[in-house]
Amino acid sequence: MRTSATSGRLFKLFILGTACLSQGMPLAFIQMGLPAILRGLNESLTTITLYSLLLLPWAGKFLYAPFLDHYYIKRIGKRRTWLMLSLLLSVATILFVAVYIPAESSPRLMITIFMLNLLLSINDTAVSAYSTDILTHKEMAWGSSVRLGGHYLGMIFGGGVILSIYSITGWENTFYLLGGLTLLMAVPAVLHKEIAPVHESTVNTKTERPSTLKFAKSPGIGWFILAEILFVSSIYSAFQTYPPFLIDLGFSHDKIGEILMYWAYPSAFATAVLSGWVMQKIPAKTLLPLCMITAAGIQLFAVHLAAVPNPAYYQALLLLAGEMSLGSIAGVVLYTMIMEVSVGSQAATNAGLLSSIANFTPVLSPPLLGIIGDTYGYQTMYGILAGSSILLALAVTFILNAKWGDYALAVNSSRPPVEATPPSPASQTIPDTGS
Image (cartoon, rainbow, N blue to C red; front, side):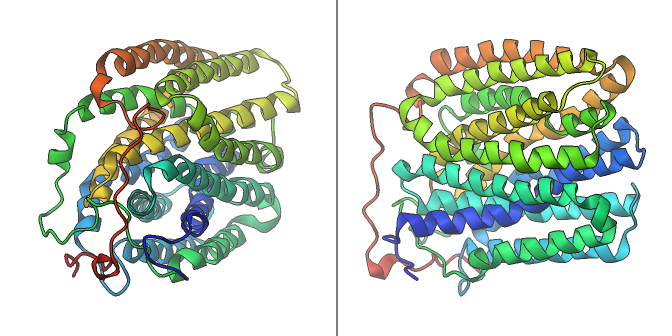
């Protein structure tokens, strides 16, 4: 296998894709499968949406991301150290649930799912930094496409296949199956030899500690963060509410799993793959508000379904496939932008801060939505979301056009970014800042 900065694009994309595939399976189960299973066990919507708070490690990446930049095992590699550790420990945590935790909502289950989310978020931070290190600016949109594609392919298994056969396998065997598949898909990311970075600002021997605050104070980052918060508030707030919503409308676990497996996740996967091409044609500042208007349309469709006595199968299919496809292209656009502004020796720190912000609102909003849904019903809840999405789209359009200005990203701009000259063989060693 080639490990220099000239490593083939396909090899780099393969490693990133399989890493996200192994991460996507357990994450999909937590986000989509587990809420549906708990609802089937007669847990309240308020209790189920509290599980979204267990995703807080995804919003806390900025706390531990500098640690990933500064500490690592040199023989393994700066990024591969954390890829390997996080994936193997994630598998161990999944198997712990199978052996020791019964099929019910409990403090033990919540604590374990929290630890699993912490490990998966560490893995995602390492993948983000690795992507930023080894992909040229021209490859970043394709890198985001492959990463999201691997993530959604993992969702086909973790949120679709596993949920659809849950009634056969039961609680314990479901977690055994999830752990085994996660381990199998992690093999390429765990065993490959780390690829050297391609950016001049990444290949260095500085020992200065990574600083989140310094990056946050960089020119234009404040406006980027504000637009990001508004964007994710519109796109991802309703994500975890749709499976319990469909359970309440009369759809079984098997039917929801079938829709996710055969329609929603494949649609998201195809959208992710196509999004890299779309980003070569349409500027990010146009795609972001367009995604938000589309989110409002999907939320209004949910308002309609809440009023229908017996919704048809195809209507549930449209809801889930539309939501997953929207989340796919939105993710590719957002994470390409994050990579562009995160390039440097502290890529994990930079991407960790921006990813934390991207995950913060979707973590906090579901409990509030659960209270609104339980109190006022689904129509009111989704109606509020739709109106908010439209207003937020207008705000993001203003920020990107009137405020982002000179700090516009190189993606789709008329000025292509300057690529670093590939480092000479003598400079391709991992920076000597590890433990």
